[in-house]
Image (cartoon, rainbow, N blue to C red; front, top):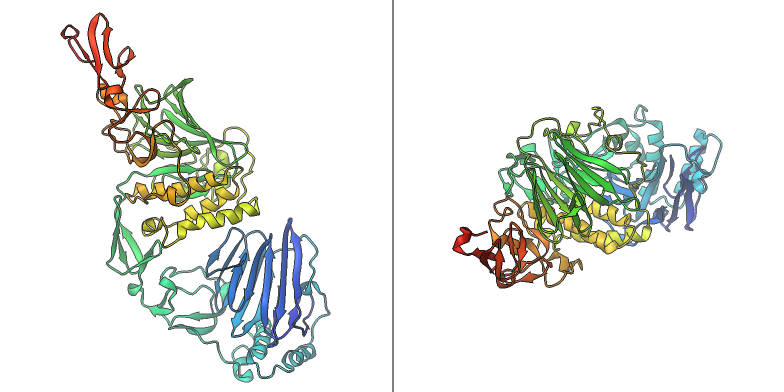
Amino acid sequence: TCSTFGSGVIQPFNGSSFYVRSNCPFTLTRFTHNRVDCDITMRRGDSGLLVHVEIIINKIRTVLQNGSILVEGRSVSLPYDHTYQHIFQYGVFTKLRSSLLPLSVTWHNVPGGIDSLRVEVEQQLSGLVTGLCGKHNATARTSHYIQLCKENLYTYEANSYIACAFFREVVQQCGNSSHIWNIWRTETSCKEPTCPGDLIYAEQGPAFAPSCSNPDPAISNQDLVASCVCPKNKLRNDVGGGFGCVSVPSCPCVFAGKSYSTGDTRSTKCQTCMCDSGKWHCSANFCPATCVIEGHFVTTIDGKRYTVPGKCTYVASQGYNWTVITEFYKATPTLKTVILHLFQEVYTFSHNMVKIGEDKITELHTSDHALVFWESSMYVQVHTSLGLKIQVQVSPQIQLYLTLPTNHTGPISGLCGNSNSDTRDDFTTSSGIIENSAQPFALSWTLGTCAVNIPDTCINTDNEIFAEEKCSILNDPNGMFAKCHHHIPTDHYHKACIQRTCNCVRRLEECICVALGNYAKACAGLGIFIGDWRKATNCTVKCENNQEFSYNIRACNHTCRSLSGSDPRCGLDDMPVDGCGCPEGTHLNLEATCTTKADCFCNYYGGTTPPGPVVIDGRQCICEDGELHCSKDCGKYV
């Protein structure tokens, strides 16, 4: 630990404290650890308090000044989560914890500046430490502290923050078993800090005080700090950032940023939930559970979320007589192909293409085991005789949505988990071992060797800045996606948006649009339609020929083929999808153009025939409005 407090006392990582009186900028510490640079500078004002602190980690600049926190020039509120760092309230202090370094910075704001700042390193640093924190001094004696006290107070006698910050740090070094612990404020006339609202001050309280949103935070010895807490048997009502204290039954519930009182309900087409004493009690989910693989982000059937570690080939899910395999591109963490093995049939889904064996499926394919059809220009649907349902997004990027049979028998395994309504064993490996973390679990389901090569941080700072700006629209309380905020929280989708855009090899706009589309699709699954979000975010889709884009495309009775007989795509319980298709009153023909009924070819057992008269098997027939009518000798319509 290295700290600075009062008007200029420095406690370096090693050795005894010393004093520096100056309002010039100083480097507190500078080092490089595992190729990540850290540089912390500070400047004191005429009051002796710190008025400017700059923390640069991996080129991300955080500035503390005038009671505000600025990250890359933008003011942020707490808690703040960034790809590289987290900033949050820690008792009466504020703490920054790095995700890239074993480092945290903690400071205490007072009127006029910062009276103490502490840098903690959790392990031995690999490089040279410079700056004031790197200075080595001899071991301190009592007389040394008396001298420091005099230097600290000289000309600042009237500033209680300067004096009390010094005494507080000395008492902290003595520890709570020292006799001075309980009397130092009386002896020094240092008043306890004033707490907001109903909160009361505790010299040793929980760094994360119990609240309605987190009534049982994990408390450990190092988490006991000077803190503002509620009276006994009360919780802080932290909804909306308040500082009132309430009893447990009076705690509101929160969902997607909205507050609900006890007795309030919220509903979607899938389930209804009621608020009771700060907790939600929900009915069974009527919608079938779905495994989602969007880029390298996976949500299991039971709802556990994680990321795969490498751009490899994985068993996504497997059961009796079926296996689904996903293959990633080598250069980018997006899917290249999805392969379905169903009995003896092999279906391959790739960019804008689906095949059975080596034969392309251009509109619809049926067999004894599967119905495969294009829902729109972007989605292909598979319904199997086993009850397994698969939807593959084939444009602009491959993504997989897999729904298991409701009454499936036999074991289910793979990246999608085991579908037993228990997330605790979702990370069951191919050898049957339950892992605690995603990486060994996912690697056990790879086919062939697999390198861990998908970074969990941004590979490009410019990409990150672009992603932070563009993905923020998901969280905008007044933006396009706000109508869904009360049903689906954006945190997972916002994080995924930033990470997949950060690591996007090409076409950043495409990666952004796919990520935004994933949230819109999840909302549509609950019956909440965002509106024309593509136009608002410059994510419009260009359609071929005379097709038109729509958010509400259904495959039923929308092709010329469907006019020739009953359409097997009708009657399926499918949500509408977005993509290119034919406007109302027209039908998709063989050339992927939209035509009127009168211009539709007719389908029959021997192939297709254009509009007009035709002889089939020696019988007079006519193709009219997509339907084939034959002479009475034919005996039936085909």
